[in-house]
Structure formats: C-alpha cells, structure tokens
Image (cartoon, helix red, strand yellow):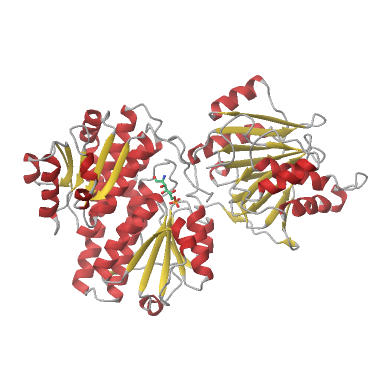
Length: 622
Ligand code: M6R
C-alpha cells in the first residue's frame, strides 16, 4: 500500500527519497513521486505512474535539487493510477506539497467548499483536498510575522486547524514553499516514523527506508503532528499541547532485507521458514512442565484459564492462520474458538461471552481492518492480544499483550514465513491452553517434542522445490485450480489457493475436500487440476475417497502426501511427499510445496512474483 518518505538535512534529499521509495516498493504501488525545495525556485514535484526506475530516470533527466523533500508510492484508492493522481500534490498555487497515506472520508464536501473558495483541482484524489486545506489555513497567517522566531507555532497551528477538518485516516508529509527548512509529518491511523540523524531528520511510513541511515527513531502516534528542521524536532498533539517525544532504538529486525542470491523475496522467505519457526519457538518451550510459555501476554495463568472462548481475527493469510489455530486449540485445549474476518468483526457487533479473549493475528501490525476490530473489541472491555511480526507496530502497541513472531522482515507480498510462524505460535498457544485445561503431562510433552522437530521437517519439505517446479510447468497454463483438504489441512488448502491467485492471477478455490461435492465439483474437467492435501490422519480414507471422486470425472490430481504413502501413487497424477508430523502441525509442513507451486506457476506465466498487480503488502485502508 502507499508509502511515504521525507528528508531534511544537509544532503541532496532525492538520494534518500529514491532509495527509501525503493525500500517501500514491496508494499505495492502503481505510481511514485518526489517533491523538493531549492530556494528561491519553490517546490518542484516530479511524479509518474509506473516503477521507481521510471521516476529515477525522470530525475536523472531533470534533477530535483534541494536538501529537503518528500516522496511517495501510491496505491490507487480515489482515482485511477495516472500521473496527475500520483503524489505529492500541490496545495494552492504551489505553496504546499503533500504526500498522503490513508483515506479522507469527507473529501467530497471539503472539495466542494474549496472549489467554492476558488481552488482549482488537478487530480481526482482525496489527498489534494488536504493540500488545499492546509494552504487555505496558511493564507490566514500574518505575512509580516517571523514564524521561525516563535518556534513555528503559527505554522503548527495552521496545520492543526486543517487536520481537524479531516475525517478518515492519514499519514502525511508536508512541505511549505515559504518555510523551506521545515518538514511536517502528521498521523491519524496510518503509521509514520521519524528518524533522528546528525543534523538531519527522516520520515518514513515504515522502518525499512531508515535502516542504514539512523537507528534512532520517534514513533509518531495518532493525532500527533511533528515539525522538523535539520536539527530540531518538535511534536504536538493536534488538539492539545506539545508532546514529549520518546527517542527509541530501531529494532535490529526492522529491515535491511536483501535478496541474498535469491531471485525473489518470496523464494528467499520460503527458504527462511525453518529459521523463522525456530525463532518463533525460541525460549518458549518448557520441557520440564511439558508446555509452552510466553513473556508478553500480560495475563496470569489464572486469568487465561478464565477465558472460555477465544476470538481469532485477521485478514487474508493471517485469517487462514487463525483457522489453523482454531483446529489446533480446539483439539488440544478443548476451548471453543471463533475465527472472524477482521473486516466483518469490526462492524458485526457479535454477542460475546463475558470471558472471551481476542487474538488479532497480523504480520504487519498495521492492517486497517484488523486494527479496527481490535479497537472495537477492546472498547467493549475485552482483553486483546496481538500475534504480530513487526515490532512496535500499531497493533502490537495497542493490544493489551501479545506474542511476536520474530520471523524477520517479510518483503514478498505473498505471505509465506509469516503464515508458518503464525501457525507455529498458535500451535504453542494450543499446547499452553491445553496444559491449563485437560492436556496431561505425557500428551503435552509429546506435543512439545513434535514442535522441536518442526523446523527440521519444514527444512526437508523445502527439498520438494525442484519436483514441484516440474509439476508447476506441467500445469502452468491451467486457468482454474481446486485446493482441497480436510480438518487441519482445510485452512492450508485455502492458503495454497490464495497464494496461486495472488501471484499468478490464476483462479483457484480452496475447499474442505468433501464439501467440494456440493458445488465446485461442477468445475472439474481434464483442464482443472485439483491439489489435495492428504495427511496420515483420522480422515485419510475419507480424503482418498474424495480423490477418487475427482478422478472419476477426469480431473487431474496433484497430491501432497506424507512420506511413504504408496496408496496414492496409483490414483494421483502427481505426488509430492513431505515429512509426516503431528496432525496439528501438518499444515505447517504441507503448505511448503503449495508455496513453491504458486511461485513456479507464476514464474512460468511470466508474472512479477514480488510485485503482483493490484496488491499491497500492508493494507492500511478499509
Ligand atoms: O499484515 P497482515 O498479516 O495483517 O496482512 C493481512 C493480509 O493483508 C495478508 O495476509 C494478505 O492476504 C497477503 N497478501 C497474503 O499473502
């Protein structure tokens, strides 16, 4: 989704801006731009649709000098991807330039008013409203006043007054033609971080552009406005007075992700899974008590024992992990679990039992719907937890407690290692709650021992890559796929289908294998492969019967099975063997070949794996 960078200091701003925008590319975007000021020339905006390389070429042809500037990658919401709609946007006749993440919900009424005041709009975006609104407030400043002499307070005030009129969400970076040493950033619901350097300040919508520049950061909170010059930073609350800002150290995990010899981040992250799973478990397995432990839940075992219903919420892949978690927790702990789409939960107002406990599952910790669902449930007075990868993210901060994945930065838009890490953390939670309730010592110990072996088994599942590549090439031209599994493997089927859709643009449906008879079986023909997840579990024979139903209708079958499964060979067209593990962990192993399948089909179809069309890594709008 959209990304913001900003710089004020002693260097050429575009050096950082362009490099920073490249670091934000993974979030997904369709246009990009920068604005700089080099007095007396005023604000110069350079922007266009397409990739950062294109912007870079434009800047090489027509440089944008200046040691202060802002930059943006846009993921279209209001108005299509065009040069005019790309950010930054001018306010007034060039007095202001604004880059914006988020959505201004009341933009139409504000726009009507600004047009009536004489403002001319060049784009269809909601952002241009913000730029003109700030300009209209600046026009009320006393032109004779020495704004710098009074610590830029009138400027602060003008921005504050403009922001108060906005409904919706924003992360903003703002330049002012008449105050060419001042960069302003403001936040409501869309993350912004200020980097503090030696005689320079940076702004970024996530930490990745700051890595290698500075490790001292200030997280701007909702309703705060930060004003920075090269050597000063002041933060005020939009409606109240100055805020004492806390300088913290940038987490070592935050960025710096390089391809390290891999062709794509997705492939690299698939291969990082054994290590990511190890990190998720590090220090959390308690062999003596045959259980797991977590440092950050901030609830005592007595309080956690009182939780009679768990609500797991998230979006996309994180929602799939929640569904795996439901099977795991209900099987091991016998605690009822509901899994809710965060986008539905935020509005559905479900009747919750008094002793419910919410877990918001999110890689980024910034997904707008997940954040809103967490806030809604918290507002109602229920305890909320985050299962999150990005340290210090909004959801991690707002939850009452939580568990970090420690998977390292996930750059690939198609989530891989975050999914398996989330499922691992949920498996650990299942053991933890199990041991609080009915799970005996021996069963607990067996479960923990299985967990210990998981990274090794995922490592062996990675050896399927070459075989899966051949299968992918065989089926790469198919336009429809079914993904089928039962019990623990049903959510993994959903996740496999999502991976294929996301990066290869091939239609794929995930279904519980038996449910397929009630409709999707109509899709089956010789051109529609069905991908089965078959574990050596209690429903093995049932799934084999479902395989026969597909074969009887001429559909090709690709089967992911446990090592040593001979029976499947006479039925399936293509077989991929992965190590067997405990039922509750099997989806974490079996998903690996499905990640490869999506990856290699996307490659065979010539798709851009790390930058799939229309998608954003972190969906920060509703
Ligand atoms: O950062 P989050 O885990 O909250 O993101 C949720 C979804 O947007 C995300 O999982 C999305 O579905 C991925 N592109 C899946 O690969």
